[in-house]
Image (cartoon, rainbow, N blue to C red; front, side):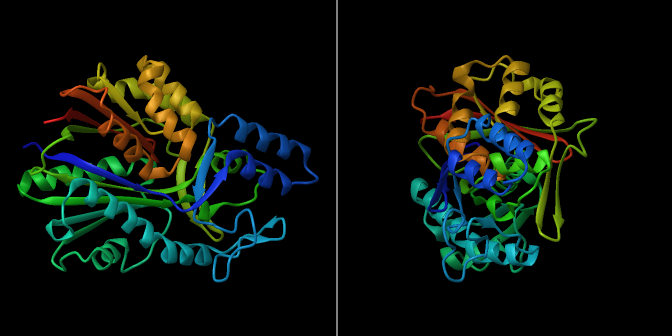
Length: 358
């Protein structure tokens, strides 16, 4: 059998935030700056997001004991990078494990059959890392090969799936567990910078896991081909750096325009696919992709639905969309699925898959 995604599991933190709640909280941080308040309201209201999940259970109320000190009354605090990263180390492993267990359960594959683990994240760093934590939490064999794809941003899940495909091709019978988990809200900050305001308006927290193997049966996404392209500009327009007070996102207004201009040339072979999983970097990114590739509302619907319900969860987001397409019975056997994501650089990562039902 062709190396395939045989199951996708997802997980989100229990704290659900409506877009309006976060908007009002951020607006309240600028009582004396009418322009910033208007910018925040406009960015949040235009994001096409209804809700997001956050690991910060105390973002809208008093933080529980032992949690990251993120609020003092109505004021959002500014924890150090060390404090934010410590919270990632405390909370992320459980989210990695929850998504992985869901994928293994859906695939009906016992944990002791996993031969390789690939973890993905750009919102926290620690060692021993989430790959080691998964071995411990899931009871995997200590001989499982482990790889971590870190700090690659929103596009990282597709290269991770590509690596899983390469492993299964080289070692038939392998069972590769790919898990992406992002706690973007740990890096929330109060700012008058329009780029930071846009970032605060779209990012949420979540995790997703995929099982890639050539031994599964039933409904699956066969991994046929992958491509990567680095655009001529955009290196300064989408970036992710480590600052003294959290990880700092650069996301300029040029990003949707660059994506719209470059995407058709980058993914030409995917045109004509039956279904699309487009990373929802934001509403304007989805709009530009739809225009450039002449995609219909129906083709964009899975991506817009994930954006609406979860926001942009960085690398994990594309796998939420793939899960929806994997279980979409309206797609017939043999339907082609195109996956597309964007990352710092500005890079375009893509994959062609085929949905099989037998």
